[in-house]
Length: 173
Image 1 (tube, one colour):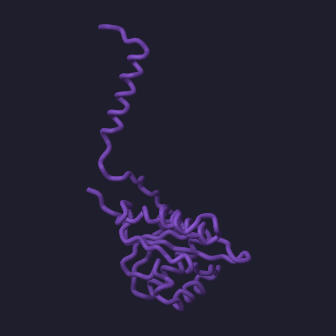
Image 2 (spheres, helix red, strand yellow; image 1 turned 180 degrees about the horizontal axis):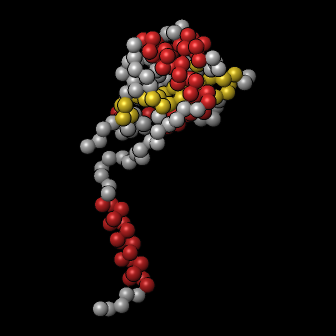
Image 3 (cartoon, helix red, strand yellow; image 1 turned 45 degrees about the vertical axis):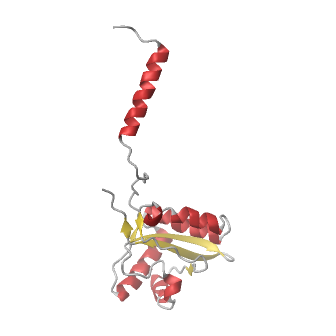
């Protein structure tokens, strides 16, 4: 058998790596599975208030999703002026299954409807009941199952929160 020189070896090795990496590809966009999100601190209190509100409506609890947490964080970035509105929507809309993303019926809260945070869960739950349906579209539907939450500081040090939810994740065959 003929001995390979270094150039031939690298060429064949590179071709093998490319072939193996392409073997696992399909036509759909790759979305890594989201690790389960564990609510902590302020986000846990917001989730508890949301779920208490939803139980009063006869709806199921929402489960925290780490990728949706990032979407909620983008809304907070917009609120504090880190990103502009086109960037916000371009970033978040890509998560929606209608736009190639993995989330079914992704809610997108109107940026003007950031909700005030309160350390008292009961106060936040009661406050949710005073909002109009337009103000809480991101959590106000029985079909929603997943949520991302971001608590952030704005307007003189006050705490607010955004929630982005979805009916679920797209099932790929």
